[in-house]
Image 1 (tube, rainbow over the protein chains, first blue to last red):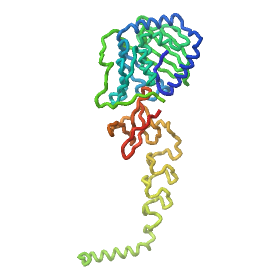
Image 2 (cartoon, helix red, strand yellow):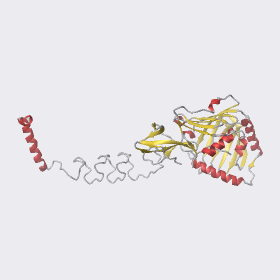
Image 3 (spheres, one colour):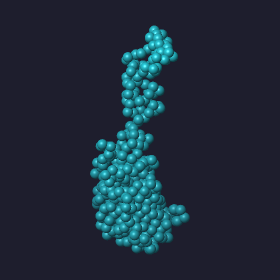
Image 4 (tube, helix red, strand yellow):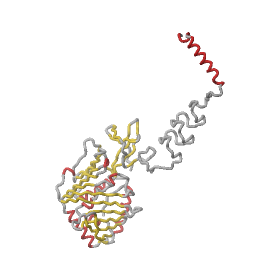
Length: 249
Length: 157
């Protein structure tokens, strides 16, 4: 199960959890129920088969996991184009941020603060893009695991168990709830019963005191619609200051 | 010399000289105390160790035992007193000049952008900050100032 890096402290916890999970799963078959696997594969077929995707995500990060930034709760407008282009606009007032990736360069822009970072990075898919950004810059693009070509593979990575826990309502949509567990965290994904699109993604960090959560609501899904190609290669205004994008040491 | 020659002015000078000569003998008059250079009206008294350069003024309720010194920016109306135990994680926020944190993750409303030698800094509460993007997060790092100009700080982590 892939998750976005939240911040340095949580990152180290998650890293430790991931390492522990790797050892824990060595020689141990993950208990993935057939119903869970077929539900995830249905979602993968729907999302992975779409050439373009547009959606909105609203999220709430438990204060215990964050640093108090407005970005931790700002709505996300995400646009994806297969195989490897990604754009997200994260509204957060003055901290508003854009992440644009055209397959060759990653540009992170904060237009109000007049600053940006531009780094070359190559990736052939959304999965590779997320992995390389994480490896080089210490964070994962928002909900990239749910937008990957192979959603099922991303969701089941490192999990120790997966099952469908029942049918629940998310807003007006009737969903099936997929529950995933791995060392240090659990994830619940609510997938539409009819269209198999994720409507809610709840991460619970069980290795952190108080079991804080990151709750993401996904809506306004649009598949295979025309998208503005210029978004993926978006660049900052001329008076923006270029900064280095770093990973914590 | 014309003034001295004037009878009215001459009499005024004489009256003033007489009063000046009698003044030290009057018990109601303020006494000149050489040990108190702050002046006669200072009620703190000559034993006040804060000295004459103390800008906090005579109304400062913190008293003479306050070890924070005259550079304390909290001001005289701060009721917390000298035993204030709040440390670096003080919830008053990173831009409070009392907070020694080297970096923070957001800017307050009243910041200003200032550019020196082509580098843009964010200025708030008398301090310059330089942004880094670390783990996808903007980290505003406190700058030192040399000759009135901020210097790009080392990355905080």
